[in-house]
Length: 76
Image (cartoon, rainbow, N blue to C red; front, side):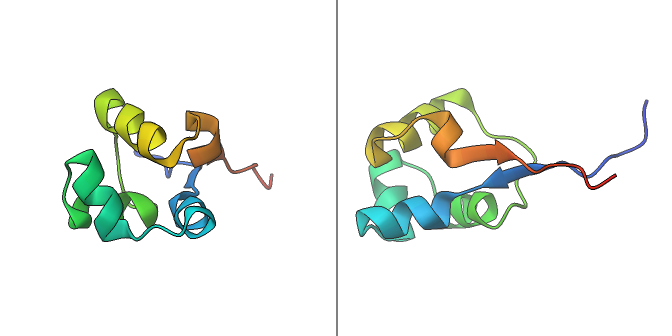
């Protein structure tokens, strides 16, 4: 098994919520997941996301996965 590597995925949930005037609690209720789970995602601590959850988030925020997630550039 390869050594654990820190991921470079950045989550832009806070910006999307602010742009839409929506709270994390409101999004959680609309998507059907807990505020804690969305908070873990928002703070970049999530190790995975289900496609069904990603689809629901994008539906409620009227965005695409690329608006929500990006890859941080390497600094090597």
